[in-house]
Amino acid sequence: MINAVIPLPEDYNVAFNFQFLRRSPKELLHVIEGDAVLKLFIINNAKYLVKIIPGNGVFTITFPALQPDEATQASISSYIKEWFDLTSDLGPFYKIASRDKLLAPLVKRFYGYRIVGQPDLFESLVWAVIGQQINLQFAYTLKQRFVAAYGTILQWNDRSYYAFPVPEVVVTLRDEDLLPLQFSRQKSKYVQLIAQAFVDGRISKLKLSSLPFEEAKEQLIKIKGVGNWTANYALMKTFRYPDAFPLEDAGIHNAIKNLKKMNRKPTLDEVKHVFKKYKGWEAYATLYLWKSLELPQ
Image (cartoon, helix red, strand yellow):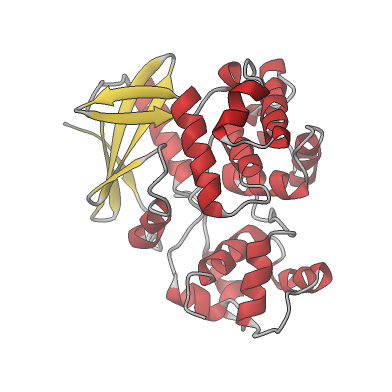
């Protein structure tokens, strides 16, 4: 039975955004099934399996396992809108980018690509810490082990579906729990400290959502292990502050180097100079620069 329909923006490209979801076969937090994506939601301790089917300018949302009430459906629909960035008006960004030598070819080629986000702030921060100073595929390996060991699981139709570990579980973990997963001792400690900040109530999505960008970043950086890169990444992926971008990100530096045909990586000052043109839209400029790394060099 069809339960909900979410309209897509006219400039939304399903193929580009779903391609992002296919980045790693080790991803456990969603399952691609044909053209659809399935994801497990835990709401008030109940497990809801959600199937998102794109087509005819909408997402059709069905619930294969357990039928939610109207309030729960609304909560899930809100998450999906955040997850797929369905409410952002990218018109002003495309106008700026179309006049820029660096971005114009990218927005023309990948028009309709949006920030596939992480509406769960805890997940976003932990994922950013997991990915620090290692390659993406090993980061996915660590995430896979972490989710399989400590996440919530639903078995349905001979398949396993997972939800990200919650702070209340992670705060009970110790190094001896995470080191066997190949977490470094430093990552293990940082993940525990992030969980503690959520359990203590020092950090929450609700608290940060009312703050200006710089104040929200300042609150995140107070957590040991959350530096400028991690804070910017989370604010970009969870809240979509358009002026959030991880300045120190190696992918941004490589993209600029490739597109400008430089024989060295740009300095931080050179990166700042590039991003001056995108003032207020740095997060989306970052998105398209990252996307350029898929192009043949």
